[in-house]
Length: 612
Image (cartoon, rainbow, N blue to C red):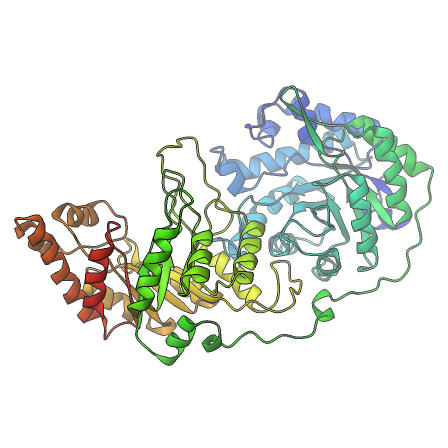
């Protein structure tokens, strides 16, 4: 007898989904650095065997082995051209095991990269990637789609739109959450559940990340926020490392006991994620048979953002002294002071104090990672603000920080009085004293600018109110001498759209090229502070001309430095060039930042006199 449509079946009874495909393949000796999805082609019998075990255990729904079978993830294995083949074969293997007695769901997971507003990939680009995968699954003949383990509403929305552009098959939309019940990006179930319903999900649920007990609390909150059928697929507890292997230790009986509680709270699609085996599914199936579905009360829509009174962002001119100067059109002078090696900051504080006396408006603290133990930019900025009484510009990099960590850092910085931030993606880790060090790039500077703009509007990245909004002056980097200028202009446009309020450039040597850049960004012009980094030797000039990416040094400047035949003459010529550049920049920009090649405070003061 043919199966009724999935939506009809789940309205009448509770359905049991299968367990973890990855766990079962891992247990069979498949290394984690392989593409599990590609096994559909390379080892189809192995994948089919796992499907058959779940069918024998009583699963009503089989997910295809295609969780990561999108172009972005497959590209990391050199398999981007196999998207269609892997997905179609995934459906065939599941369909063969189902034998018309079990529903086959096309499994789609996140891309593994950030999309806008946090990342480089646009929503339309993400939708196209998902459409390619969904089209292959649809061609294979799935009964429904399960979109699972998503942390970002924008991304799951792109995946849902991709499916809907192809067909009207049912969509099970599942977010993954932390212990507090919010998504990994901080969106509460009271927000994401009704939003998934609005976007057309037939079933709204949660999966992965947490065990059954924590997930039950989230399900209870979802039940009050949406009228849709609910799903729950928790991990089999938290993983533990046992002799080098990650093992999930929640027993089948324990998982089944929580399946009963899920059902009593209105869940109609129940199963398991990481660590869940056929034996777990067998016990869950027994629990389902013993219970009738609960009758849910009416959903109570909770608009989290509406709980807090509307807040007005701080006017730009009131954010800081630097912000006020830029808003008034006053000329600004900034100086870069790098954080010290070690923890002793007395010399740094004294230099900042002397700069304040000489009329410097702001001290920029770079976040350039060096191959040694140097103080963090945030700590150095706070010490200068508190002990020297001069305003700082915190150079804040996306490198080495995930999205939630950056949000926490910035809230802490604001609480300690930092108001000016320069948001940059950051450079790769140098291979100096720590060759095994790695870098984290969860988002880029455009995404981080969106984060700070939200904080300035009183909302966190999950859309929840934070109370009094932050009042950061948002600065971004600009590179007028970028090798691919069209790309630099495009990214600058995105930064301004995201909320950038001023820009700081890389060191300027090529004035003609800089003027061309200013013309290219005239339609999105914000106050510009130009970088000025004087030459102190021929070696420095040659280095800047030949080894620093994105810096253009005209040959005639290098020749002028080459003609200086003594160190003193080279220093004087470097100052002369800096004087000429500073004079030309005054009519083009609203400020100049001095960055010295070496930590020579006397030389810095000489350059400061030139700029002043």
